[in-house]
Amino acid sequence: MASNTGGSDAGARTRRSWAKAEIGDTRRHNRALLLDTLFHGGPMSRAQLARTTALTAPTVSAAIADLLHDHLVLDVGDAVPTRRGKPGSLLKVNDEDAVVVAGDLSDISGVVVGVTTLAGKLLSATSLPLVPGRGNAPLEDVIGFVEQIVHEAARTYHVVGVSLAVPGVIDGRGTVVRASHLGWVDVPLSAMLAERLERPVHVGNDVNAATMAARQLHGVEAHNLMLVYVEHGVGAGLVIGDQLLEGETFAAGEIGHLSVDPDGPECTCGRRGCLQAFLNPQDLRPRVERQGDSALTEAGTALGLALSGVISALNLTRVVVAGPVDLVGSAVFLEAATATVLDRTLAGINAEPQISALTDTDELILQGALCLVLADLGIR
Image: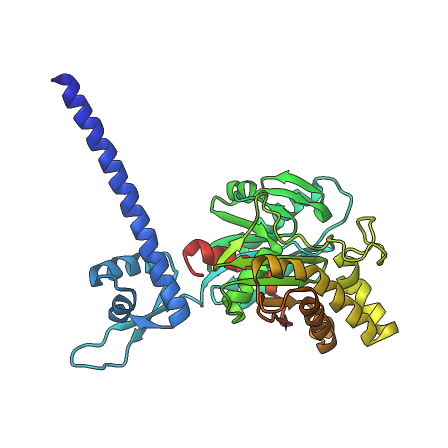
């Protein structure tokens, strides 16, 4: 009898724990659904949210109360009445005093940390120059710098997230497996910052983050997409079926050192003909000044060579190139890339690729870091 009673109690405890987990998951799902709806749909009343999301009115009210408490949503006053009775108040995502502290570590010369609203408006940005060759000192410099910006922002705003976009291989826990230009290997950056700040911290690959920003904040609508980012190097982000593709070892999109011409220009890695050697703006811009359109044609052709295999393997039709407008925004460059892809892929199997430029990229990495937080909140 005692044994049966004990078994029953254990089973009850298991069921209660499972129920709590389900309730917690449901609450997170409801919060995310409402936030995503408000982010993309604009201000709505509770009744409108219930109709749009198919959640019950009590469920919407409870979730909105949590979101108001966490400063993620604002009550902006009464809606215009459409029927008798008191109109419901309108709610919107808090794009005023809820902020994310976002960091961009993509430039070898220094770190930029900005304070941005949830809508992507950059309120401030501060730079920390980095001195190469100082061993692990830059790591402590970066952590201390981010910590300082977070504390300063918290005096004025509600800091709802902290995130860093870092070039290199970043695993799912926010550990920097390798960031060559920083000299970091197996650095648990997310955990280190979270311990110092006593709040969650998101760390992701810079180009993957930029790809999220292109879709979320720049209107690039595509279920399947490749974004090639040309700035301090060359990298790519891939979205397949609306899901970011990171790869088995979190290194998907590392196309900068893909060789497209063994007799091409020497690359910083010591080999010849890497895509980065053709597209790096620091090298390409002087070549354009000397050679004009022929340099842009050569660079576009190199990109097309690199893209052809990826486009064929993944059946992609949308490629966006982000970078300096005078280079990647050139019609000569884009036409050469498109012509090369068409020449090297099988007509009738792959639809004609659309290769376009995204040239408003000054804050793209910082916006991408913001998107790491938005995704964690359920806004996609």
